[in-house]
Image 1 (cartoon, rainbow, N blue to C red):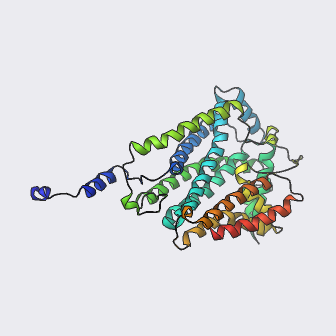
Image 2 (image 1 turned 90 degrees about the vertical axis):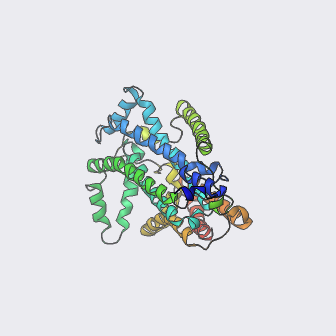
Length: 366
């Protein structure tokens, strides 16, 4: 052992060895690589605030709406917990969409296919949790949104109606449905937390990618304290922006219909989900066939998996054509979100159909 220690050691090897102990991170990464850390902090916020809210929420079609009012008006700092949880969902999806866009731009699906696939699963699970959480306040849009979305399961040939009734626990969205949604909304975030750990474990071995596309083995430095500071800086900025939103306009991202208690006899003029589902909702209603619309909506998310099987290529920042195609894709998603927020009437229907075709065509060419 002593003889081994006397051997001259390569400084580069020593630096690499020490870095491995300290979570090696590519030194060329930008603030776009902070989204994973920010998503983790937002997930913790959602789980903690959701736990507090569940202590005062009543999963009853007769009392759910009143229990939310009770939380807002009577519980100490209840309005803060509720608005943190409600707007935290929007923050989570904003960060997640930026995280996905960054991955597409820098070709992460091809470099880290298993990490990307686990991320798509996390996205689907998060969407399910967010949808079920939107139903819990039992307002008008909550009830009718749940009715419209869950009734899509009937499009499955032969067994669709039976599955829908089993999912509802009744012949329509009612008390058993609310019970199940409350339980699943509580359970799925814990599953998401476990999936995030799997996501990180898969990422740990190959390490993070970098914007230059160079060999990551020669582009590493210690995570602490440099990148810890870099992660904390946008976190503080988000906290300030979030505080301004909560104090100035906490209902800006919500729907006014949810200020009315759910009624089976009164249908809102325009039923729509939360803003982060609007692009998929626009694709759903652009297909005349019910089954085709459901398949297209699911395919709008699963098409992200196709990016993992493409041949290796340079980052889009080094390819003007691919870069232009990427920004066209971002514009298409934004326009589909706008279409989803508009009523189902001309010219929005025809525009949505054109954008749907363009969305899938562009996604396949990314």
